[in-house]
Image (tube, rainbow, N blue to C red; front, side, top):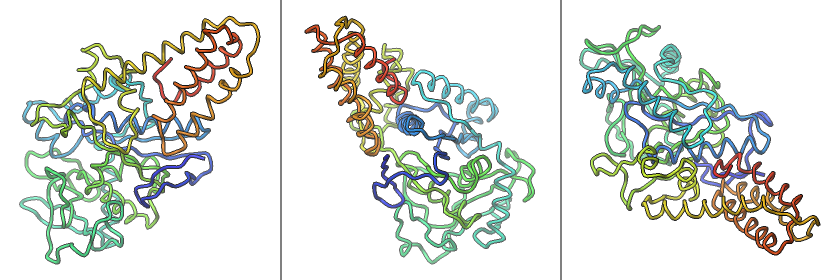
Length: 413
């Protein structure tokens, strides 16, 4: 049985979806004011592996990825480039889906733009105001809506926030996001009232736009409902973002939002956090230009456990690429098997391919353990082949099993 580390409980737990063999899954997508970088794709890849393995295990997965196309940063970047927000974000979405193809990431059932759920956002805010979790307040020339975390029992449960440190004095945070990763200990904005020159929509609560803090909640609930099985994203989402989403959704519904929360660790570059200010941002296109294939890039990003930091260097990428190439060459060599007689040792090795893979993957998606087991088995099969002790039939069955597990890994065939 699959076991996953649940951020909500801080424990490894057996996976049991709400509806037997059907899984609803929400994954945080990019803010499309800029193209996604390699660190973003590390997160998207662990989420992709999770979906692929759930499907391999017989689950029917409905996955939604959010696209943050309307936020303060998008408006500022569009103004800087003198283009519309739609033109800016569409360009970066095209890059995202091109890179999905390069990295063999399965397209989610729903890739939803925040700009498409303005009505859902407004409905949710209206409900939150009625339930006294949210309120209206004029900031400058705009009438904004804010959420009061002190009204929501259990606020900050994902990040284990100590609410005893919450200030008694009322504070409001008016921007979508703030630089760095400190907690904004105060009320967070849900709705930006329309100001002159703003990008605004008409809605049942007035003219304006939904703030980043309600967008994911609106996108997920409109398409998947108010109760889902899995929510996933990068570890940086544990500061503010996911706890805000929990509070908003559960504030509206009164029910538990997600049963399992998964968070992937950061990708570092030469031991440092990736950032434009450091000049060390890397994109999949950069690696492709240097001759690295999508499979090699994918393998490098999934080979280390998703909850452990991964340090990118070109030397480490080359080493991972070499290991993958060695494996693929060994897989190809299996096709040369010519022995007419089955070999008991070979038959046992072939029979161990799927169980070994599953044992590792069931342990909180241990891709490295799964791959290393496959590498060892294929290496032993090739040793038998070199001695003329691998039958064509056993080789054929081995290739079929490897193709089946590679539907999850997507790095060999």
